[in-house]
Image (cartoon, rainbow, N blue to C red; front, side, top):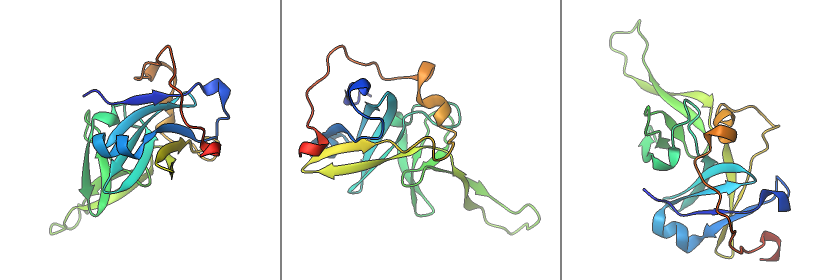
Length: 170
């Protein structure tokens, strides 16, 4: 599946500034897009009227989350990694798993959290334009950080960049 993507030169803006990734119209058509935000690859989802952004590679082994399916588990909306079926909540980045009490033969499996494993980022909508602001990697260590940059990149940077609206001027 080819997804639209957009990039902005990371050397011309601050690492914590919002980066333009598309229009609301773009997202309503395709439901997800990939982008390079300050040299970090992210996937942005539009699901049930809400925007979510996270690192593009799964925390477990670098699976391509932009190719995963979105499903609900116990009332939590998740992206399911296409490689190993890891479930990651769109809103918090928590990894989910099913647990059962082995000492209780009548126990029913329940969904539990592994904690935040996937770094999520802030999505802002301003005058129909969508921007992503990276979460600060210095605030906490996240398992997905390992696959977020360097040799694991999946998005190829185009040789020319398109002109994008400046967040401050909109």
